[in-house]
Amino acid sequence: MVKTSLFVTFEGGEGAGKTTLMDRLQSTLKSKGFDVLRTREPGGTSLGDKIREILLNPDPLLTIGPKAELFLFLAQRAQHIEQVIQPALSQGKIVLCDRFTDSSVVYQGKARHLGMDFVQQLSATALGDISPELTFFLDVDPSVGLTRTRDTDKENALKGDQDRIEGEGLSFHQLVREGFHHIAKDNPNRCTIIDAMQSKEQVFEQVYPLILKVLEKKHD
Ligand code: T5A
Image (cartoon, rainbow, N blue to C red):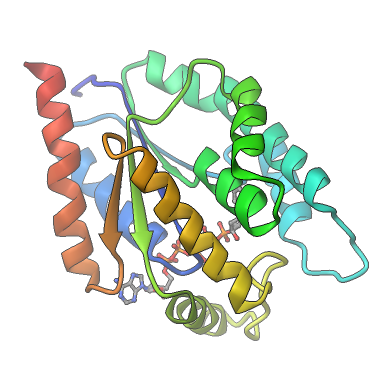
């Protein structure tokens, strides 16, 4: 087993193709002998999974204001880092994480109007010294992404029900997309924007070599 710690995050709007890409990256990296931990937010721990159920519950009677929503995301992240991410990195694993702090900055900071700087500053407490070395932002037109998730939900016999955040209007999801572009522009060394309107194969072929390059550098 090859031991190389690397923290990689995957970001983007709804239905951008993160799960699809991460499935392939996980199996390919494992087949090359790397020790890979795959995780996601909200979630990744028992507490995180319970908070996820609350955050994504579409029940209109369950009111969650923007600040409460943010603190729930930060609470699950603090637990996720302490219980899962930090230990895995200390053990020399590659951590592939579906969404992380950039999602809070964009969804709660930009689209919920709490302020991107405000969310970034508040997140620092949960993060400690953990930050992703690489972030891939899968960029897709929100109307295309939302159609993809609806089609997947139907295939999974969920009658096309949308979760609480997915169900926000198109303008909300357009703000999300703008927010990710803003972060990518401000962090060119960490973030790469990937055109997620391309085929699944093309998306993988762009991302995988960039991860390998960083892993090779670590072995030099
Ligand atoms: N959130 C999260 C916040 O508001 N703040 C935070 O701090 C955090 C961490 C999470 C929600 O929480 C919010 C953001 C989200 O709204 P989730 O269920 O985890 O909810 O939602 P997503 O992360 O958006 O996951 P999705 O499953 O909706 O999207 P994926 O994983 O990006 O997409 P994927 O791979 O499942 O693909 C969807 C469909 O598209 C197809 C797939 O086959 C699938 O059918 N597909 C493609 N089709 C054509 N071309 C391609 N290139 C394709 N790639 C995939």
